[in-house]
Amino acid sequence: QSVLTQPPSASGTPGQRVTISCSGSSSNIGSNYVYWYQQLPGTAPKLLIYRNNQRPSGVPDRFSGSKSGTSASLAISGLRSEDEADYYCAAWDDSLGVVFGGGTKLTVL
Amino acid sequence: EVQLVESGGGLVQPGGSLRLSCAASGFTFSSYWMSWVRQAPGKGLEWVANIKQDGSEKYYVDSVKGRFTISRDNAKNSLYLQMNSLRAEDTAVYYCARGTRWGLFDYWGQGTLVTVSS
Image (cartoon, rainbow over all chains, first blue to last red):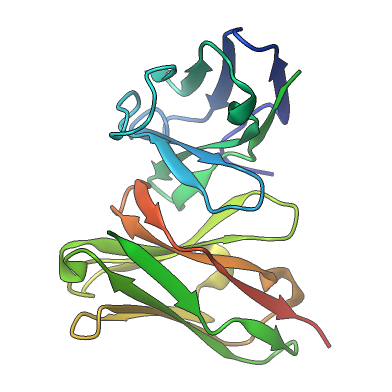
């Protein structure tokens, strides 16, 4: 049972826009930044979004993050086959340290 | 180019010990918080521990407190994780990651597999 709640799966067709939600509480998302990570099959995770909505250099602007209250979302527009991966949200929890969501497996149909 | 290379994983019996190492290069190691993050087979990511630039602050997930110790040697550009009293549920790929205290991990190693089994 993860502290941050994500849907286990999401899907879309090429070119579509998909969103992945991440729900937390006042002790984590509600008072700290949210981070998003992409993990392609068989590889280490990669930072996708930091400080709620900032993209590291090299991450396409098709990826965007947002936060409202105790929830956050990752949006992927213009979906591509190479976006098929597991996506994780993360945040600092004032009592528990760094907490991750359980992950969302994105399938491109 | 930033590189993080983990080593030290392997098969260990329950109750045993293992020491993981992470060799860093391509950046000023002493300027960054460092972390260990693990992933059990087929499961999600779990933060394990992190350590401040000078080693003066360390944080751990509750499940490893008292059993695992994170440390670093800035002269050797190396991060360590001493794991004692290992349990089956500690079986995972352990990643070394650079970042901040708060959950930003901007570079990751390739991971090293720890298997706890009799």
